[in-house]
Image (cartoon, rainbow, N blue to C red; front, top):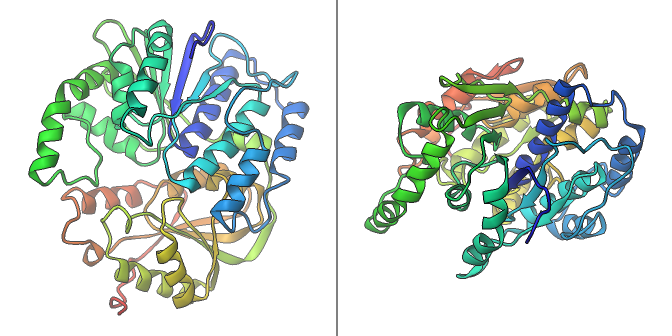
Length: 412
């Protein structure tokens, strides 16, 4: 792949990362004074794209994927006149999709939004086979070396770390991939190797792989550390982080999302937001199911917005145990909530949305509440960092209502 005159390259691997690249570009244009207060053409295009999203969105992964294909597919780019996605800081976006259908469907959907905003979006398969990563690296290496600015959504990604090895960019930008940004900045400040907070790294095989990969990880860490060879590092985030010396932290307040969508129509009920803590091996499934049941009864919840990584089996059990309507969103929850309809109260476990939704829903009258995770919910194999990290996510959330952890006994 050759990208002519792409001074800014953005690499994203999840729908939220892609959304946050759009937010970053919008914020940069606002700083430059080139953002239109209300671009009617782009707003209308966004509305047309979302016409296919039902008010009870995404009831099946297959439906969402079909909608994504209709919204623009994976290849090429479309530019709308007057969309404002231009100038030296406008990124060319390279999507490095995961293999699971829900994530791919959401990525195609957000990619359609990006194209209708005027961005060039390339879809580059980097997984799904033994040779896929090497083919992707070969296809992208020349563009990476030419780029003056590189934007990444997941500094913990091994593929992204490999891409940073040949980079000569004078500026690196990290946009949110959720609460992991908090751990990224903290680990960078402590000089530690970059490692996801829920990973235990146990087992001889895992240790061997880490040792073999250490040179690449170390190079990426040096690239992402401010200073050095006059490289500028920026973190664009909704999370509460303390910048390192020489690092610029720019607030992501979801200005683009608020300008393009909503305000939402509010329902009288309460919506619950799911989490993939069970899938990542952090929380015991029975404890999680009991907590969801208790929250449903206490708050009169009627809908459960599933995380894209939650398994169908787990969701079926939750529906049977609680009577909740399970909703599998076609887009990141910030966009779904902003478009509506949405409950007057949204209850979530410690996760990214307790930091992002208060920004996305400013002035709408929606209350975001966070339910703490009781230490008894954690599995025996949970990372030693899990308890402190989850507590930190809850304690640092702004403009939220804090709920006590549910202490109901585990369901059978």
